[in-house]
Length: 249
Ligand code: DC
Image 1: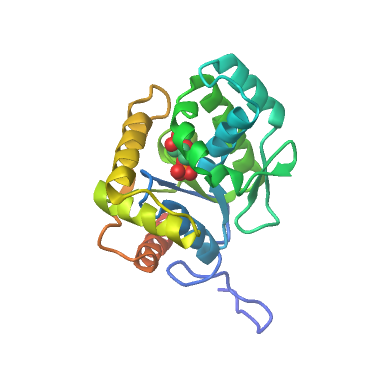
Image 2: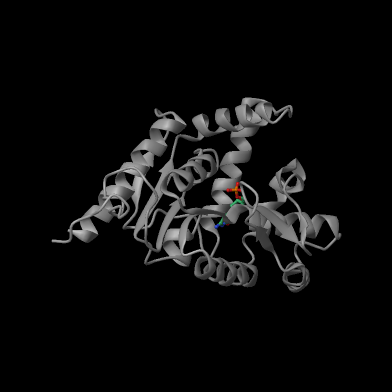
């Protein structure tokens, strides 16, 4: 057995804190309001991985459609303009900023009109194919990745080492959505209206033909309802490190 000197550190052992050494894709899917984005981002930071917010890509597409007055039912026109915008992330910011025509769209993609339209845009099959292609390219350039969305474990990265599916009751998710909006300095609609929006978005996201929201059969399902963000991140981190330990054993 090789003897380690002071300057030769052993690689972080599995189960131990520290960045993950090799290429790895972890997927985090689930409906809106499960804390997915926050959890995935914090998980990526703890494991030393990059964080890909695929919802930001669909939101950017919706923002472009609105701002360029494209008819959202004209799928050819939608695909044409989104392809032309050449969506990219700026990986120097945290979280990475989404760019269209090299301009950041961060704030715009969280506006209420974008949130209302996005699930309709995300149901356009050829647009999803374009996004899936881009997401796989990103994973080639960022091979240590936590990728968050609706179809990351089921369609985009079916061979991901660890797949999570976060869930929570719609009422809990609606309440969280209201808190998120308040924290962002916005005035949310009533809990009841937020719940209706969540249910509508769930229905659209899970009934579309391509890349519907599903829990991949090999995913670990986590009910985030009774847990704090911190507890969810702890659990996911532990599970990832455990899985890596398992693959090395
Ligand atoms: O996670 P989010 O709320 O930012 O997602 C915005 C919308 O994009 C939501 O309606 C679901 C859709 N989406 C999708 O269809 N596929 C993904 N991989 C990510 C998001």
